[in-house]
Length: 112
Length: 116
Image (cartoon, rainbow over all chains, first blue to last red):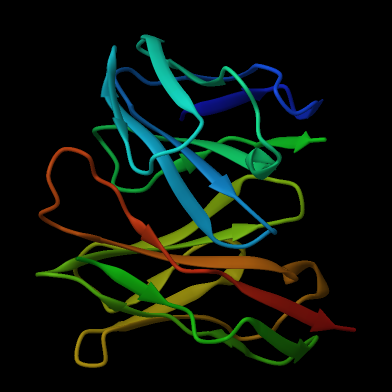
């Protein structure tokens, strides 16, 4: 079964600073990968998804970007953080053999 | 377009009583349906799914869900609630034919509170 790692677990950053959140997946190959943001502990907002290396689709225009430099690595970045970027960021993976997604433990980002 | 409605922000139930968390969906064609649970400051954990076949699906931790095509519902149930079941529950739907992205739509979540 696959395991999804996210780091860091928590992060406090000043407004205007850069961001890099990393997600790595073990136990599978060529997964679909997703970045979600969860604000106020409720609904999930899909930010980006990737069906393969270097292939990124953005769901909403925003201050963030994503990259997939390796098959099982998905990175969420920003050049300059905004207060509104605060939230709980979740990485998810779906393999070709399953229909459900599996989620990582999340990163709590606070922008001050 | 596909959508999910979880009409209750919060469900309160006494320990030992049965619980139901409601979910209705809208999708073109046949659906894949999912339930996830989220504990505070954790990622979502997969509970169960409906793909095809039996309308009653059994999942982890004693949970089950019933697919009702005519009512487009997929309510989550458990015969006897535990205090440890208190968490945030998400329903999700995806059309069977949805292209290579396989992106599900999630509900807003329902907070389940089980009282001792």
